[in-house]
Length: 201
Image: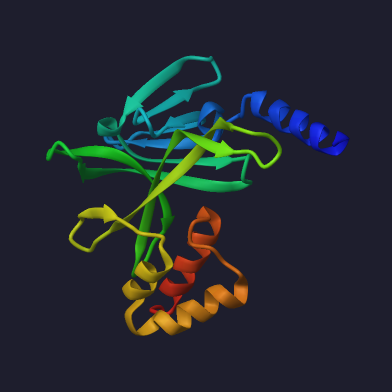
């Protein structure tokens, strides 16, 4: 009973600590504007608001919408890797085509993009009666078609293997051998990059 109580305390404590999301931090990077100018310094991104912020050594902060940016590249220390964001025309639910920021996951025969947002999820605890709510970062994936259209990309295994066509068995074996999951962003990039490599020979 004591162990259950300790686990419960640790669980509640961990939930009470505010997570430091990557989009809340400043990152070393660069922004290429639609004018062709390049800004280098500290960069902060916000895909939910479609805003990229920039600050130089003087501490001056500028904000740019997707209409004013071509691409943005940062080195994200939280994942220890470079990340690239592109401003691309996207037809939203309103039916209008407008520039939106997408993160590039993998590029080639199959180009996959993503957007992220915070969601509140309710979880049932195995240690006590009831449930609790927590905030998680959710990635939604998209596919950039050859004609420039951007459509939703499903990470359901059956949908993905159907998309692979004659390479389905090979890709299924690759994921199994390397224990890769489609719903993990880093592992998804590895899967898509392997698929794209099949067309470079």
